[in-house]
Image (cartoon, rainbow, N blue to C red):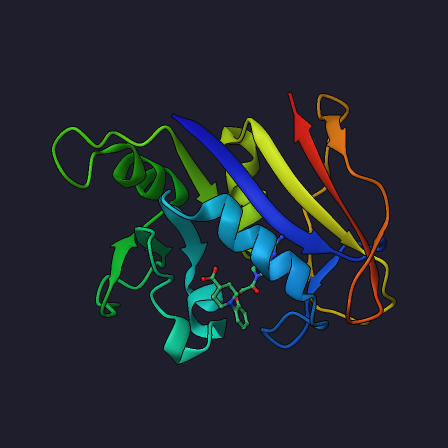
Length: 168
Ligand code: VY7
């Protein structure tokens, strides 16, 4: 099974502030949904909490949440005690004959750092904004090569952004 990480960051690497994404980029939300739909998604408990209640669980996807709290539970989510447990869960078919080809890790900062070693693909949206944050994208080693780059685009919201895929 392929493991991908998907995030959006500023040029400085900020991905979040106060448990939220500090910009609004509808094109990136659409890209996120299109990329992850139909695949298991793995997220940390703080990212789960950050999703607006009406969007939880993320529809059309198995939602696997990583937490050390053995008593944590939420409707529509499966609990995992570690990244490796989450990826094992994701690799098991949710119904017979439905073995997933890929899993997307959707955040946040702590989870990206723990999951990077298992990833073969990264989908990174760079948002040309200067914002303060407290959650950061993982640092990429030289083994990660930009495989695809659509160049700078202008959002209807006024922000510039570009989407890149990295592989190794
Ligand atoms: C997370 C939301 C957050 C706030 C309000 C609505 C990249 C993104 C993420 C995570 C963007 C989010 C949402 C958007 C997705 C909808 C449900 C509502 C869906 C990431 N590149 N971009 N993110 N939702 N990990 N990576 O906006 O979600 O997919 O159904």
